[in-house]
Structures are given as structure tokens and as C-alpha cells.
Image 1: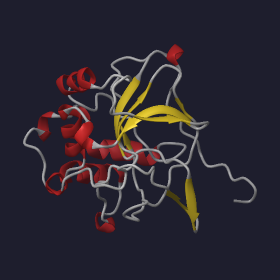
Image 2: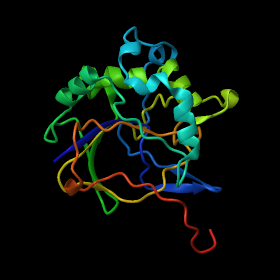
Image 3: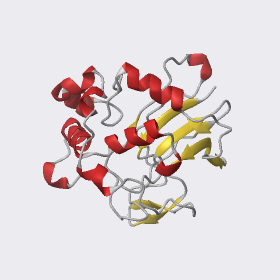
Image 4: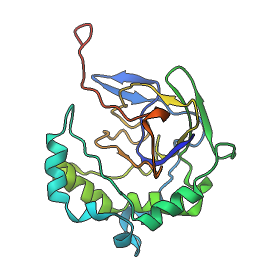
Length: 219
């Protein structure tokens, strides 16, 4: 059973250490190319106000939940997208057999991913563009309490982002995301992950788990 989700940005793969931070290596295809056109970083679509669920009207309460969450600040938003949009994204989500996917098959991860927006179905591509626009970025800044002068911005390269799919037997092991972007050099500040499955049974496995840092070997 697949578990699809659009994502911005996404977990890191093998990387290298830069001081006390980690920089992810490029995969070698088009991960270093700009995927979000500048106009979508600077303006919002006219349909933006109808895209999201009720959570978007109560950002101050979500900020308190985010800051008080354990094992580190995070928040779970039910019905992230409006029902009609969520159904359309799920209906348009590519099947595992389609050719747009990059296949990850290693001890850490067994999954499918596509960060090349030109290959995505239009509904998914346009939604990712909207998530990278100034209104959503500002909403996430307020929700997380990131300072206004911190310069929070979407990743125009969509590195590790885009759409991901875990077919039956897929996995993504416990990992620490990279800190520094391999192209822009900017610091990762926030992950936004949206699961599109309308239902999920515990017996399927694959639940999202969050862990606190546990020092090892004096690190």
C-alpha cells in the first residue's frame, strides 16, 4: 500500500560534516536545478484562500502547540488541505510504476521520489508552487516563531522535496536531516510534510516517529 505525500523540504541522504552541521550531497541528476519559478516565490495564486483547512484560521493557538511539543517543537495539522483539493491531489498522484520516480533502494530508505516539478501532474506541481509562495512561508514563520528578520524562504531547488511515495515494503529509517543546503548553502529551518492518505491503519506500519537527540561517544 502506498503512502503518498507532497513535501517541502525532505529528509537528507548521505552527507558530509561542515563544522557541527551536515551538508547533503547532490544525487547527480537535476537536483541542483531551480524547480520553483521566481514568480511563485514572490506571489500567491488567487485560489490560495480556498486551499487549506480550518487550521489556517487559528495560527496563534498552533504556535503554542508547536513550541510546547516534545521531543522537539512540531505540530500536527489535521485536514491540512481543503477536502476537494486533497481528493484531487490523491487522485492525480502518480502510480509507483510511472517513469517520473527516482528509486531509493539502500539500507536507510526504500522509497520513490520526484523533485522535478516539470514532471509532476499539474495539480501537484501547482500546489507545491503555492506552498512556496510568500503567504504560506509567512504563515509558517508565525506558527513556528521564527524571527521576522531571519529571512525564512522556500527552497527554490526543491532539494529532497516534491512528491514521495512509499509502496508496500518501503521504509525511511531514523535519520538526522542535513543542515546546510548543498546548492544555496542556506540553513534548513523547517520541514513541511503533508500525508495525502485519507485513512491509515496501524497494521500498515510506517507511522511517523519523532525522537529526541541522544548523545553518543561524547558528541
